[in-house]
Structures are given as C-alpha cells and as structure tokens.
Amino acid sequence: MYFKTLYSLAASLTLVLFMPCSVSAAPWMRRDLAGGTQVPLPNRLSPTSPDGIFDHDKAARLGRKALYKHQFNLRNLQANTEGIPEESGMKILDLSSLTRQATAHVRRGDGPSQVKSFNGGTHALGRRFKKEDGAGEPLKDVGSNTEWDMKLKVGPESGFEIDCDTGSSDFWVVNADCTTGPCADKSQKYDPSKSKTSDREPGTFTILYGDHSTVKGPIFSDDVTIAGITVKNQTFSAVTKESNAFENDPSSGIMGFGWPVISNLGTPPWFLNAVQQGVIKKREFGFYLSSKRGSEIYLGGTNPEHYEGSLEYHEVDSREGFWKVKDGNIHLGDEAVLKNFPTIIDSGTTLMYGPPAAVKEFYSKVEGAKVYDEEEGFYTFPCDKVPKVVLSWGKEGKKFAIPPEYFNLGKAGEGSSSCVGALAASDLGLGEAWLYGDVVMRIFYTAFRFGEEEINKGAVVGFAKLKEKK
Image (cartoon, rainbow, N blue to C red; front, side, top):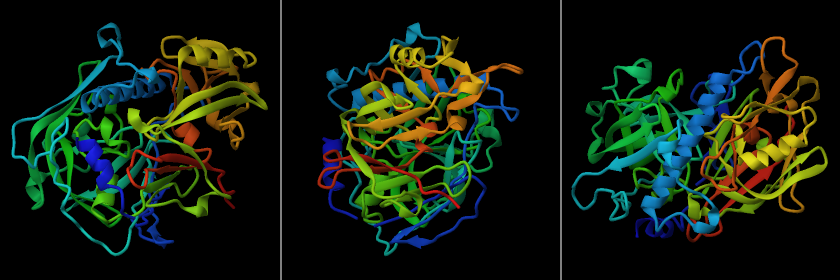
C-alpha cells in the first residue's frame, strides 16, 4: 500500500534546513546555521480590530475554516486508509444538518501507471535531486498573528506567499486562469505554460464549502523550491476558483506539513518528498512564531537560537493523520482544571478549540465568564481579570503560560468591560481532541519529528521555553 511504502522509503535520509517567519516583510535570505538555513516568515487575519474590539465576523470565519479543513482531513483519512480508528472518537459529521458544512474530494482520471493514485498505487519517488547544503526561505506575518506565510518557487516562477500548515498535507496555489473571486487580485499565480518542468496530471482537485463556494482546479507536478531546496515533480493543484472563505487572505495558497494519510491528492507532502529525494536529511522541522520579530520555520532540525534548554518531546499517534499529542492539561493559575486530553498542534489554525462540554467546564471555573456566542462557541470574561491560562503535557511536563494579551481577543463591543477568550468551543469531529493553533504555538518553540525507520513509528512533537529577546 502506498502510505506504508512511503513510510519505509522516507526511513533513512538526513540535511538541515531552516526557514524563519518574520512579522515584517523581510527580504529573501539564506544563512546557514548548524548545517541549516534561516528564513523569515510574515503573519495572518487578526480576530481583533486595531481599536482593540473583538472582530466577531472574522473570528467566526476562522472557526469555520478550522471546521471545514478538519472535516476534509477526516474524509481523506477514511478514503486513504482502512478507516478512522474507532477508539479515537473522531467522526465525519452529517454535513447536511450543519449550516457550516463542507465536503471535499479528488476526482482522478485514468492515466499512465506512474500517476499518483488517490487510494494508493505506484509513485514516481525514485527521481533524485542532490544538493550539498540546505537552504532557508523567509516567512511573513500577513495579518496580525493569524497566518504565517513563506515564500517559495514553483517551476521558474518565484515570489509565491504560501500559508504554512501543519494541519493539512496538500499543496495548492492560485492558477493564472483565475480571474474572478478572491484569487483575482492575487499578485502571484502559477502559469504552467511558463514552466518547462510542468506536467499536467489527470483529475481535478475540489473542495466544496458550506456556502457552496469552492477551491477547485487542475492537478500538476512541477519543481517546487523553498529557500534553495528543490523537490522534483511535486504534485499540487493550481486552482482556477478560490472559495469565498479566502476573501481578504493575502496568501497565494497553502503548503501542508501534515501526514500523508490525510492528503486529498493522495501524494507525499513536499517535506517528505524532500527527505526521500535526499535534499533534506533530518526528518524534523521547527516553528518559532513571534508577533515581534524573526518568526521562522526550520526545516531539517530545530534552531536553538530561539529556545532555552532541551525540547520536551511527546509521542504522536499518527494513525489519524494529525500531529496529535496525548495527555494534555490546562491550568488556571496553579490548578489543573482539565487533564489527560489529546491535543492537535496546527499552525494552519489561529485560535484554540475544545469540545463544547470541556470548554464549558473550563469557563465555569473562570471568574465572571459568560457565554458570548453559543453557536460559534465564544465566551467572555471581565477585561480586568484575564485568566492566567497555563498548558502542559504529562504529569511532570513543563508549564507554558499563555500571555494575557494572547488569550484576550478584545472587548466584546465598544465601551464593554467584557473581553472575548481565545479558547472557543467547537465540535470539529475530532473526538476529545483539542485543537491548538497559533495562539498556543506562539508561547513556545515547537518541533515536529517523523520516525526514523518508518515515519509513523516513533514520531514526536517537542516543546521548549522561548529565549528572552533583548
């Protein structure tokens, strides 16, 4: 089976590459660091307006995007494997009963045997591209800490700003043929006629959103370069229609850093292809997200310039296709109010979400907390009493406090004394798992490591305290 084969193929290769995320639009740069390369990133769409008021509409859109994405992932998981593990509690929701509904599929055509199959099959993984050194590419904050973009090159065309997403596994960009809707004004688009290395693959990539808008387009393979590191024949979609959900989103697409089993295209993500092709040797990448300076993704290891001491690693259960860590705890001050729940670490999500019953229990212990929007799952608390929220994993895990300015999404309205919390209640179909997005990833350094012999065996996520910036 393809995914099992990929795990074995990715088992023995190692090269360190570093990519930074930077809040200001940093120039493209390369700087070797312990064998890797540094690159700045920029940010995202903020749910807080410039005057400190909670932007309800924007926050609701962010929540719906998280719902859509992870329902897509579960459908992909079911199609690519023997099914969703029963004990996970994850489920595909009855979208016909939801107003926030979405479906996703890939329609593949008949083609030659080397074409990647959605459910498995033969893959052109033998093509090799060797490079002596790694390289980095800047990432950029494109909207006040809600999205972290990196620049990359597809074929001969450079300058694509792409959202880095550990919660998905596919790569798509805007097609030059897209002239209407949200992608009409995008500054960078993929034109296959300009690339000698572009190949059209059979089938169509489609994601249908609940408002009946879509991300849709043909499927291609081409060389994709990040910070000087080139993966040959990377499969991706160049979409000719972009969903209304991406309105005002400055990025030109999404690059998934998740697991192959949730790939909509049924093909290896760029990072694992880079490992298999020998252009990245270490199966680990690290995220440093900062609202102030020097955000980055480090490909091929971790960057000790940004964290203190050692990383605290926790085992990942990858059968469900997520970077999911068990035994999460959430504290109010020194008191652990909820314990031993699974957490999914997702750089493509902005806020943090938990199962409705668990989130209700959490806020029941927050002084003055009230329901603000039951449908979207938002709660308020007194602005002068922002709760001290602390996260940890395991019995003896390090404790990481969420700064009040991160947990507070702003006043509920002009002149209000109530503020909205960054933890929202939502049934995403993820069972008991909580979804931790950028509001959490900004409080520590995060490392994502695939297994050594087989990528799904011994995989871990690591956390470390951030260094103080002078």
